[in-house]
Amino acid sequence: MRRDIAVVAFAQTDHRRTSDEQSEVELLMPVLHEVLERTGLRTADIGFTCSGSCDYLAGRAFSFTLALDGVGAWPPISESHVETDGAWALYEAWTKLLTGDADTALVYAYGKSSPGPLRDVLTRQLDPYYVAPLWPDSVALAALQAQALLDAGLTGEGELAAVAARSREAATANPHAQLAGPVPHGDHVVAPLRTGDCPPIGDGAAAVILAAGERARELCDRPAWIRGMDHRTEAHGLGVRDLTDSPSTRLAAEKAGAFQAPVDTAELHAPFTSQEVILRRALRLGDEVCVNPSGGALAANPVMAAGLIRIGEAAARIHRGASDRALAHATSGPCLQQNLVAVLEGEPR
Image 1 (cartoon, rainbow, N blue to C red):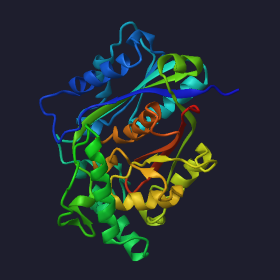
Image 2 (image 1 turned 180 degrees about the vertical axis):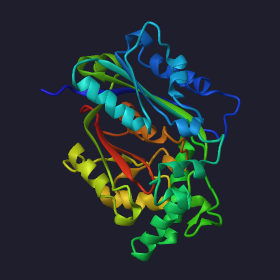
Image 3 (image 1 turned 135 degrees about the vertical axis):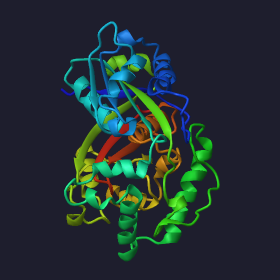
Image 4 (image 1 turned 120 degrees about the vertical axis):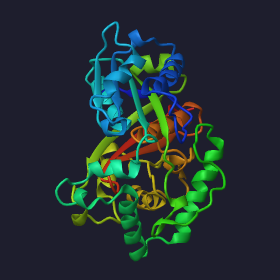
C-alpha cells in the first residue's frame, strides 16, 4: 500500500527586486527557521533534505553546498540537490518518503536573479548548437509563444491584460508579493508582450516540510495530502513543438489524477500572461476554479523557487481551510518546456 504524504508547513521570503546585502545563506535562514518553527521540528528531526537552485544564477559551481550552512550539516544529514526549480526537489523528497526511507523531509529553493542580466543567463537553457548561438532571450521566446496564440485566435491582447490585472489585484492580499495592485500594462518589451505581461525580476526563497501518515497529522492540524504528482517534458527543439499547447502539462496532470475530480484552486507557474492561457486549456480549468489567488509568478517570480512556491501556496490554502482540493503546477525552461503537476487534498471538514 502506498504511503500517504502531505505538505505540513510552508514558508517564503518577502520577494524583492534586489537583495544585494544578503548572501544566499542569509536569504534562506529566516525561511528555514520559520518552516521548522511551524511544525516544532529541529533540523536533527528531518529525515531527508532536498534543495533546488541554479549555479548559473549564483555564478559559481556547486553553489548549493554553501547554502547548506543555512540548514546545518551536523549532525550529518541525508541530503540531495536538483539543478532546477525546487518543485522538482519536492518531487524527489516525495518519492523518498514513499519508499519508507524517511518520515519527514525538508525541501527548500532559492534564487537571486538580481546580480546579472537574467534574460541572457536563461539562454543557457537552450539547445547549444542551433538555438543558443542566436541568443534569443527568455522574453523574446515567450513573445514568440504569445504571438502564436494570437495568430491562432486563442487569445487577444485585451485578455492578456486582464490576466495581468487579475493576478496583481489578487496579490494585494499576499504580503510576500513583489508586485501588487494596479500595474501599468506599459509598452511592448518584445511584441506582443508588454511590461505588464512579464514577471518581475527579483530574489527570494521558499521552504516546505513533508511528512508521512500519522506523523503528518501530528505536525499539522489539516495536512495537504499529495494525492498525485508527475512531471513531463517537451522536445528540446522549439521548432518541433506546437507552442500554443502544452501536452506535457496535460499528461502530467492526467498521471497525477487531476482530472479524476474537480479542483477548487489552481496555482499555476505562468511567468507570462500568455502562458496562463495555455495552461488553463491544458488543465481544463473553468471559470469556477480560483486561479493564482496568491498572484502567481506575475506577482513574484524568484527563479528556481517560484514553482515550489506554487505548491506551497496551494497547500497553505488547504491548511487554513480556504481550499479542499487544489492543483499546483511548476515549469522550467523556455516556453513551458518542462512541467510538473501536483494534486493536493485536505481531509473532509
